[in-house]
Length: 166
Image 1 (cartoon, rainbow, N blue to C red):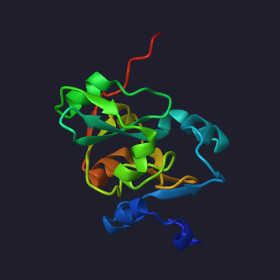
Image 2: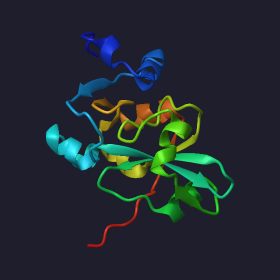
Image 3: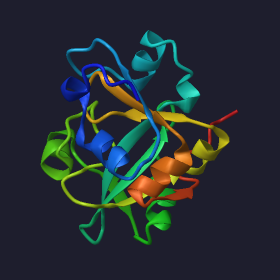
């Protein structure tokens, strides 16, 4: 990891990875407000299939769950509920992201949230040596092994995205 300007860009997620001796890279980019993940990948010349977004849901039990899926995919709410042992889950409202996670829209990452939530990573991540997730703030990304992410987030891999219509 580069040591230049670390103090300027280091986030809780990055500190957690460092504390656990998990190797990762940081990528920063210019961005003042939320833009979708596909636009970020295009702006950075990255393969969108290896870029993942973090989604937060609330289950019927009122517990929160975190799902990490490819940026171009859609969370399958039935598969997601099954993966965490809930009857159903629904996406939280955008206005509640900060209150629940401590992050803002576009900067939400599965590491370092206000509380530890059950986390599931889409099994497609296992197809990559490294994946790209938000670094914990808009304009920063973490690039790491999906297995290292699963270790740090205490996450399981499951198929949780909707099947694409061919």
